[in-house]
Amino acid sequence: MNATAVRTTVLAGEVDNRAAYLGFAFAYVFGHGAAVLSETGLVVMPSWLPIGFLGAGLLAGTVLAMTASLRAQRAVSPERRRAEKLVGTAWVTGFAALALMITALSTVFEKPGLQTVLWPAGATIVVGLTYIAEGAVRRNALHYNLGTWLALVAAATLFVPAPDFFGVLAVLGGGAYAVAAVLEGRRLDSLAA
Image (tube, rainbow, N blue to C red; front, side, top):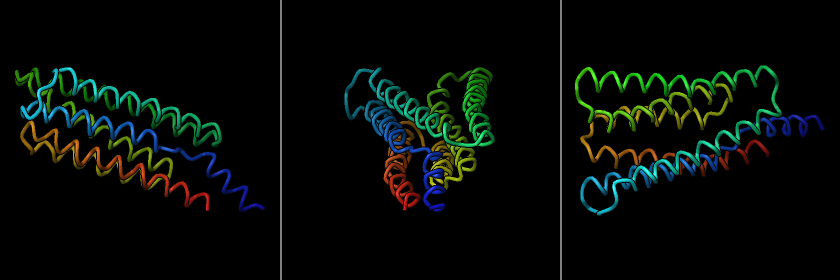
């Protein structure tokens, strides 16, 4: 009986990231994928379409991630809830610092075009590092490992010239989110067993 009670408590406090991962996979595959197709001239499309795909996927993924996290927080201890809130504020801190850095670099070096590469790579690095923190707080190795992968891939993409840079993010970033969505189901099933 105690084992069942413990298992229920663990499941009640778990964050199910499957839907959020799929939203972010959509953003990467269709947003960055459309950017590489558009910039290489392989497909003629309105200039707003890649950013529209990216924005729609990011918005969906963000809403789904926040909803899942808030739902899971209802069943956790006050200490864990405080840790979740602290790691949640890391999102704001990370993106504020990123905005300052990108603005400074593009201004100081008088290269506004840097923003085209630094925003996608920098945002993915911030996301990856925040996932690492969330994975540590939640003791979720999948989330932690996904964050590690995203941060390293995003940093490495800076060596790839545009527009192929977007293709790397689409395949390696979007693919990682799709794989994580599948593995998340397995992770949750293993906790319920």
